[in-house]
Length: 163
Ligand code: MG
Image 1: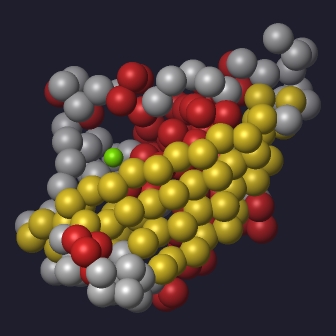
Image 2: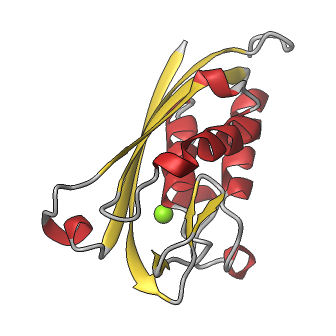
């Protein structure tokens, strides 16, 4: 088995959409970024890439590349899953956390789990999503930023010979 962790932070600014794990969350601010800024998709992508030691999201999808302007970040996650599979590994489960002061994310929990599960080729029962506030502290507490953390476990792919 392999384990990987990922982390990301994005500024929250007016005039941008708030997207978490591919799910649009109505709010007055959204993530700044070259792509859609989906901080959760980015953290999960880095967790998958980290598990198989294949670099990070910036290596494969640099913000200097015009192709990724306003890109749906699920593309990055699905590409990371494909890279892991090509290396003989498949994701077994994911546990992730978003730290965000507002809005409350509980109403979106199941949609986010389902969206990430679809990207990972998993049943939603293998995807855990948690949301925390920063207790009003710092940039996150002032709704100037959103942070995400992810841990995933990968197992040898069943349908391919081991590398
Ligand atoms: Mg990012």
